[in-house]
Length: 490
Image (tube, rainbow, N blue to C red; front, side):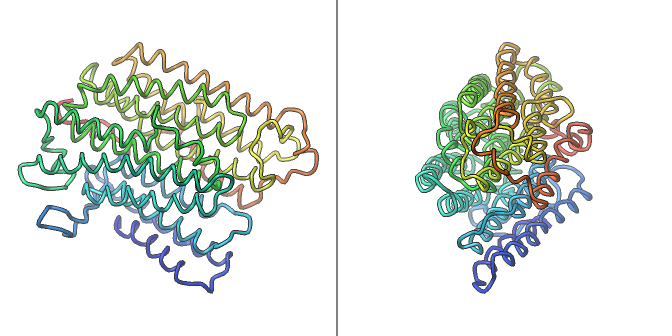
């Protein structure tokens, strides 16, 4: 089923590209139907899920050098796959203004669906790398062809930055494979062997390559500068995918490669990684607070929230504290990935609604939206409160686990990181006050259209999951089972 969840969207993308007679509405309907298939398949995989690594599928590809089409899931990859399928379905279903080249737009969305799920399910390092690079292609075209403003420049910067990072990742993958007793790219074998455990400088350089490569994708300070222009100039659904799914490829890679394949080396360098994570938390929050552009403000909160995720991963990889604390931090990091995907994905769709109505993201051009668009206001308020970590919503569950683990392992870093939560609360409350409850401006003194029925349906589905995780997280925590992902002996 995992292979079908990857290949069916790819086949759907190719089919749409080869059917010029389809109109925009027909292309959208077909894309929604295809995007729903992976979600259904993954729900079936979840029903039969029995632990790591499950639902394994393997077909030889280049057997002489140990490369194969290997697919499988543990609790972390399955939960991220389910979240990604939800975000992609929402992005495809999100109604857009009349689109130029609509078939190609929906084809690229389906292409990204397939390669993104393929990356999370890959159990072969080369297959992982192939999907990692293919995701850059899909997002490059979505930003460059359907974006606005300086979209071409933003797409190019995104592609060059992340491609440079992926080359560092490839070097690390090759060294890991060659360090095995018998050359293989099977992730399960590399995790079991941990081949660079006693390699000194070589292991440290490989770790550095992975940290930089995955740090760019995440993104971490100071290699985050590609992110704000990419978000601001991308169409709303593309921004939702970029924040909701593609950024998680970086943190997921850290879990798989740093934490599981290089546990000894990572434990020696976990503190510097945690320090960079806390800097990202604070930098993202403070810079976001200073943004007057709605979409740019939301973009910088991603730097802040992914900093929480990396802090949790660094705590999990540390040799300090207790195993329970490290497992708790890793659980929080994974829940943060899922919560951020749903919450910030929703926020970017909401920002896209502003662009579709007024082609303007400047917050000081808006005011009093609550009086004319109560549905939009309700969705924005719920997503904002979830993003700032209000109890009863998904963000709180994630941050509680991360900081409980971090206070055991790195108490001073955890205390400093808490400042980021205060600043995040301030920036979202200020945004809500100004845009939705402030004085009516020229942009809203006429009728400002509220959310349509389709928009309400999409946002309701995503935000309902945010509430469900916040109120009853047990089902997700049981699925993730972060303790099982910790390296043996941790």
